[in-house]
Image (cartoon, rainbow, N blue to C red; front, side):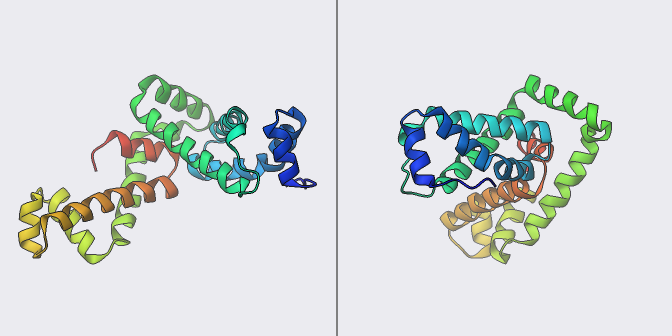
Length: 196
């Protein structure tokens, strides 16, 4: 990363509309942000597009930046939210998904194979299940895999219906987050277009 004289000073100038200060921030964080986003999406051209989107957002909302707080934390939070929104959009926008698949097919025809995505999703799904607490896993299996109602699961496990509901919400969130963090963008899209 390029070294900046004083990040707070550069941020203050950027907040005031100084494009040279913005360029300095961009150059300083570009490569590390690119690597961070590439870990989520595994598609270099998409990661580069996401980096540009994030910096455009930073420029648009620069007046809301507090230069005394961690700018890198703020930047990476914007980036993480943006990549998750992009994944969610890919899962519902067929045209956007087809464009991504077409772009990927130029790099590796095998990447678009749905069976490969499904296998990778299944592997990550099983890994996520293996990392859950015993009770949360029991609740998930009863409700989602065996089709029991919350009331039936509560009776079987001897816990309240609200506890079952809480475990289900937390388990679904955990599985999605695990797959987002450890899979590529196509696996995440597969997750969002299928029912767990």
